[in-house]
Length: 442
Image (cartoon, rainbow, N blue to C red; front, side, top):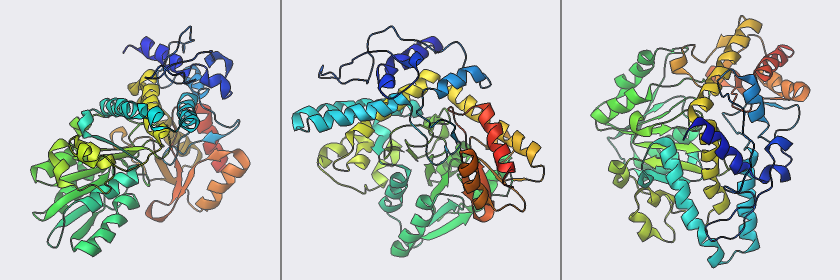
């Protein structure tokens, strides 16, 4: 799809939904659209034109362009939200997709009306699979990264003599969960630490490669750390693990929706992620991609209605979870369409540009700051973590929200500091203002 076509598609998606939610007039246009059953569902899908388009732009540093993108989000006036590593707002078009599908179900909760969601879910599966570069048969739609991680933790047949190697910066659902499981099954958990401040991919990979032994059955790590901002050399690690017959679980919570991903190229066996972070999609929806060759090695955590049919459909056996929020599940397709309309390269480029500007602003305003996130571009993404000497980081994090309306995060432990994680709804002015606000509380 061309850049021009993507932009036109984006604003055809917007339709009349933006007007009902208070979006600016320039993205408002009256429309009605129809679903698979030709039943009118306002505000979803593609309706009749004419629809305005964004001006030519999309370069990482095109502030005028990205300021207009920001208007597609229902952010509170004056709020500077730089916490994408935790939770992102959804754009109007995704909000209204969820609302409209929810209203549709509540208006008519009959089996007959809800039948359409099976086909819509499979459409979403196809779109999500293409978005990350896997076939639909390898895509499960679950509730979040945590559920995907725990499905693997609890679904592998491991026991005494087996070994699992983890990154010590993993999220608890891909870290502590393994400890809990090992106490029941008797396998060994080994943690790997990467050198603080390391930015050379070879230096980051080496501790993992040394840790792999003939007993290692699983290598589980975050694609990008939420506590330090370190991006691991995932392709190299997955290749080394596969050569040794080791299954890889990659937690992609901080890259799904931020990077243009090709999981076939990354080479991981399992990839988990959530919709509510960088994808800016519905809450309580996520993905679990499982390579076809390893699907039989993992037992699902849930067995519900339609189990026998799910078994015949590859990774669908991992989303056989009973009654779901159909509106959230199928609206993930709208979130994917929003990213595609902006352009995946443009989204990643803007995110990386703003993260770099955060680092530069911190360097200027806080020369003595300890930057936990690596400097080399190839070893970082949109998460920037830094420590401010002599500063109560928790007090600063609370203070900048109270006095300057800056939403960020305070980190504790080895990577104590402040975390700023900007996304496409942020501006360069907001980056600079956020850092200046921190200075007022330092």
